[in-house]
Image (cartoon, rainbow, N blue to C red; front, top):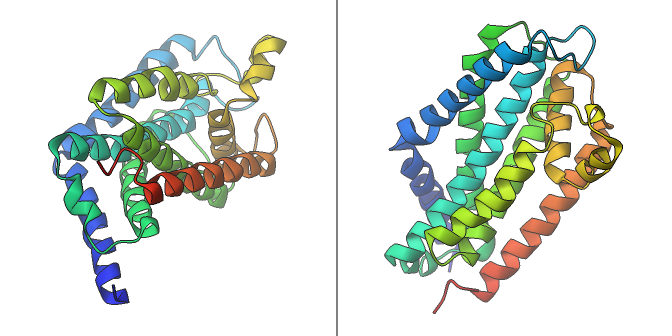
Length: 257
C-alpha cells in the first residue's frame, strides 16, 4: 500500500461519513438544536428567578454553554456509533475494511467526521440560544480546546459502542444507560456545589463533569474545579479510550467474522 492510496482512502472515508449525516441534516443537526432551545426555554423560564449559580451571571447564561456542550457530546457519540452499527447490520462494513486503510486512518476518519457533526450541532445550538441573554467569551481558546477534545473523546466512545454492539437495541442501551445519565448528571443544569456532599464526591468521578466545567470556564472564567485539572482528566480519558479503540480495530473484534 503506497502513501497516496492510503491518504486517498482516508479522505474518501472521511467524506463519506460527513456526507452521510449531512444528507439528513434536518434530523442530525436541526433536531438537536431544536431540542436544546426547548430545554433553554423551559428551564430558563422556570428557574431564571429562582436559581443563582454564579454572581453576576444569570441562570440562562449559565445554562447555554452546558446545552451547547451536551449537544456536542451526544451528537459526536451518535455519529460514530450509529454509522458503525448500521454498516455492520447492512453488511457493507466489509467494503470499508477491505479499503487500503490503516487502523489509525480508519479511526481518524470516523473521529474527525463525528467531530464535524458535534461542532456543527454545538455551533447551531449556540447561535440559536445566544439571543436569549448576554453571554461573554472570557477565554475562547479554552472553549475551542475543550470542545474539540471532548468531541473526539465521545466519538471514540461511539466507535467502541459501535464495535461492541451487534444490534440497535444494544447500542440504545449503551446510550441510554451510560452516555445520557453521565451527560445529564455532569452539571449541565446546575453547579455541583449546590449538591449534597456525597453527590459532589460522586460527580468528581464523572468525566463528563470536567468537559462541561472546563468548557463553561471559557465563557465566564469561573469553574467548579481548575480548568487545567479538567483538561488533564479529559486528556487521560481520551488517550485511554483511543488506545482501546485502536486495539479493538487492530484485532478486528466483532468486525471480522
